[in-house]
Length: 135
Image: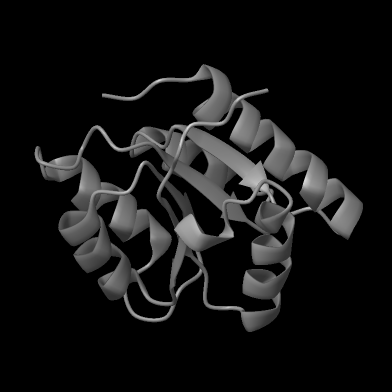
């Protein structure tokens, strides 16, 4: 499968989750294109400055929440088209509904094992960078 170059923004405040996610993306040689921020404020700033191809967004962040990041990004016409996929530990129906209500492009629950995380990243890479297209 041919993978097009991609700029991925990971919004994650847990250093362990950042390390695991980075390792999983390394398998696709995308690690150099994986940018990480740890707060909602930094996420909004980075989205507006760098216009990533996709944002992987945790909901539970210091400062403004992931929900607020979604709301603010969708309200900004310059970046509202950027795919934002929630990647969080919450499987609560209310969080899922609220995320899609703010126009998340997907909602993924962080898996408990590295093998499952690798499978999840394979799906993300396959969909967004091999087959999917964004404006």
